[in-house]
Length: 622
Image 1 (spheres, rainbow, N blue to C red):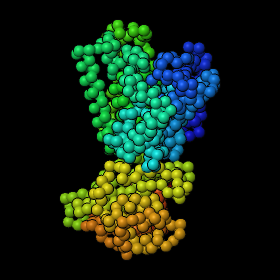
Image 2 (tube, helix red, strand yellow; image 1 turned 90 degrees about the vertical axis):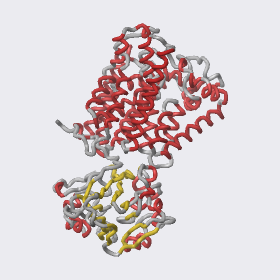
Image 3 (cartoon, one colour; image 1 turned 60 degrees about the vertical axis):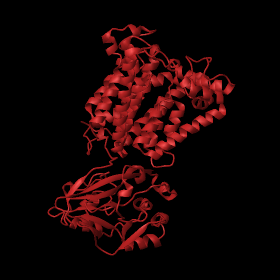
Image 4 (cartoon, rainbow, N blue to C red; image 1 turned 180 degrees about the vertical axis):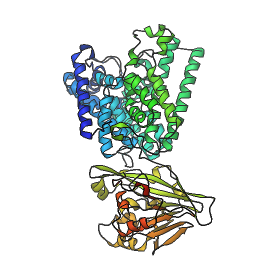
């Protein structure tokens, strides 16, 4: 099958979006109504004019259901004509759809050319999905909410701003509050605390602007779901909505109420467990999609346009499961949710088949949770068309076993890569990995990545950080640290291990402390860091030794894990930056690594280890 290039993929995306917009304009019954956009504008006008924000508002369809902070953001729309806001809303949502596709793919591990091609491909498909179409037609803010949440786990991750996006999303629309709990449970917990703090700040700001409206919303209107609409409406694709239609009663009581509460609690607990376990295992996309599906299922009202999380679901399905991919397309791209007509309470008198057909998005959410619960993503990319543009890079644990020499034939030594940063290098994303060696006699960390941003690093690489102390790695369980060299992206986390020995070649330590523009010196000599200068080779543990490998820097070293019978495993830092440098070595360090005849070599900027069988590839392994 032909491979899409980024240019051809974007041409396809533009044509797809253009056809979609032309179709809506050509048919009067498909023209956007911008009903919700009108409500937003009315909220902004009410706040501007000092009217009751939660009473009837001129020009608004229904009552206000958003927090007062949202109305504060909507005030600028009060000064603009509604006829102007409509087209702006459509264009803004198309941009946000592109952003959501891009961020979801980043969370899935796509990089560089694959990321550019994949973003266009997802946009071309997602623009036709019913939740996206409803969001465009109503002028909704759902895509903004998704983008804010995903931003915290991608472009803002590792920065002091991570969590602000989720907090703002809750301030605009309460339903993303479940993501705050997810972040606190699954991590990064610092991001969750920032999100919770941001939510509190939005409430404080709105109270300063309109204290009464803020009090009324958070104490009365938040729990009044009748302000939102009819729960039996087929557009309500939540567990409660489906059961209300099944029971034929808007206000079930007795055993019906007990069944409804039990089912919702089971979904909430089960979905949260799946999401947290998945997130803690390092599957960021699976975790965030699982908690999104859980929130949509247990919410009293989940209109179809709330299900714009179908875009990350599309990415997850393409990456991992044909069943999930088919479920996403079958439910959202066919508009099957509208197959059973209903209005003005007709849904309460439906027969069994009509009720069964009225919950396609509920089934989609259940399928998504089942697929995610089944297991973590495969350790290798799944072959797909569109240039195989989904690739799982955010690895948190992947063991490569080698037999231990020094009298431990019954034990294994595992080498685990941990992603600590993504750097922007010549328009591409270069990941940064550190490696954990689990040995029967101790736990060794090879390099430490970065834990904070520095102006010099930001200017050169615009990094996204995933600090070790924000991950599930037991920092306290590390017994010793090895720096292959002391460039900033390899020693920025040394301060986390104050008081523990940090092994580095003496030449490297001297160069780092004496040469200008070599590294970030305050990271090298952070308080409490205790270096053990090494001269030449050193056996760190039985079967684990340090070997000088000059080349990338004169004082570089590699870690060699030898086995009793097999070939060694090498952790080389930047002695080789990409596979081609080991295929055709050019400096002393690279030739030394090849002379060791290794079984595999772990690099700092490549997810998978290099193996001799890969000779001839000659391409970067990013």
